[in-house]
Figure 1 (tube, rainbow, N blue to C red):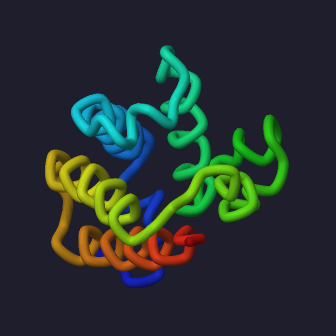
Figure 2: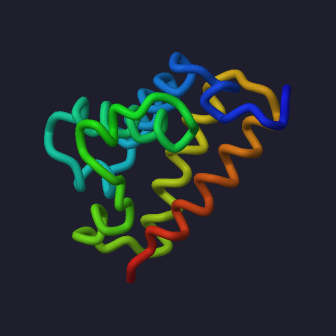
Figure 3: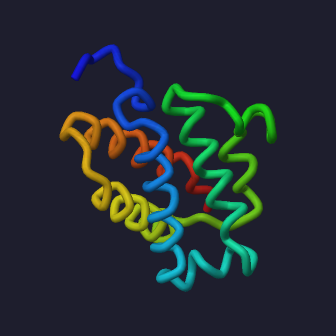
Length: 123
């Protein structure tokens, strides 16, 4: 693996899509997270997929459709404490574990998502 490759180049569309899909399968199993979403999860799954494409260095349908991510601001309406952060992160870690990838890529993803999850805590 070339250390200059973006996460998008390392993973590609399909694996990013798999992570997004698996994440929401895990959300379905986590009542406190599931309660934050409307009945239909597909729009949220699509937005996550678009967001990950963008932040990992790929195409930017997220920016084109929704503008700047403003991640913390978009999520501030929900109280996110350490417990909620951990539940969200566990869903994401399970999703990442379900997709085959190079160990270095996995380490980079884990670092990104731990940092992002910590940043979202607002109470």
